[in-house]
Image (cartoon, rainbow, N blue to C red):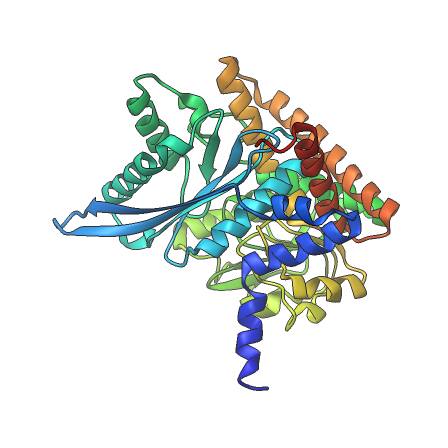
Length: 424
């Protein structure tokens, strides 16, 4: 039994197996036939490239990169590119499928994709990162484009990375093609409101959940894991909306104040010291223990597999809003359901980012750009409607929100495939 435990956890933490488990449950409840299940389960294309790069010291290193296009049934593939030392094909494969379901949940005309390069950005210079990015782009260039596959930022990539990809693609095509990526700088065709979009989407769906519990933001205690683009922005926006942010959790520890944390002051403290710890207005706390604080909303916005079979029973939140991709393993789903925790699943909760990416793609193709008020208004409309679609679907079919979101997404993608037919 002792030897089997690590293996069991390893399987539980495999993102592709997690995605497959949830897919199978939704497909079974929808009554999809075996043929359609095979089509929906299988990625349309998996690309593996090896990227030779001249390093700053004159050495040549070869990096491995992936791009998985899971589905193009409802439109071009869409998904981020991450740079990390632990990128795996299974991870990219799972994330690409989640992008398919995410785009379908919010009903935007994209399929799903994801990319990754195995590298450690913390030990690479800006010049080395640019070389990796441009060569990776050149290797996959025939598979991406505004009508084919539209990349975006993800872990350890940003608007500068997207500018390099756009420029590389444009140079090969001998014309400026802004719509090949989203998440670009505004001056290169990026959309206003994009950097705040994922955090804003989390705020919007959390406000919808509060209505179901009869809660007001001022009486709502929030614990946020992650203080980066998603978690930091969600914290800032939630604090502005009146929520009481009682704890922020980061990689090196957590801070806690039961009366609420001044988020802007904490951001300033981190900028000055490089850490959220030792903040004068809060006490330091173990990062793992902070996950189990009693609160109304827990918002994991950092990484995958944070909540799992070994710790889900310790969660003391009424609402779980998944800002990160895959923060909860499939094995933890039933534990949370048994404890009546209201889950806003990742493919709904963090879909604000891809929604405003869709807006950016539309604006680039039109050559006409919207002000931030219009972007935020249209984002709110889509997120509110999608929340109602998912919760309504769950009530209709007597399933929890995650299963409802998957069923709704699979239903929409399968419908598109049936309408198009199978080309032979």
